Length: 196
Image (cartoon, rainbow, N blue to C red; front, top):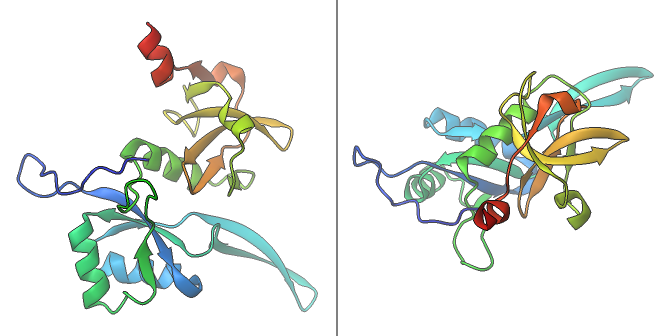
């Protein structure tokens, strides 16, 4: 996860926008998202479909896949100002990096891929709240075609099916639905690139 400062200006002088994971208390993530979006902040909450039985009838409901988590794209000072102005300070906080003691920042490519997988209409995508070292050890690939084209991640086997996992380190991961080998191309990791 990137923890660089967000005050690095863009060429036009505006601070660079970055994706910040936010911790939201008491499952108010949808309310917080709504407030932030009214202020022009791009937000994302991974959603999933759950089936509930009410009065003997099955009802499908779209709910947050992870409680108390929202992603917002902005710069730190702008977001802190909105939290303060909109009375959100009591229920929203940045997720902090332990080593740098700064708010965690999700790299744009990882967030773009995470959103692309999360927003597909396939119900068999899987959210992983804990990622074992065994899953991380898979081959790094890029999807060449299909609904996940361009997504980069690690090949994993989840629920007896080969998938591509996109991880947001320290938080969670999402695994695609089944992808055949023919739709994947191997990409070199940073460690492999340095050996060339």
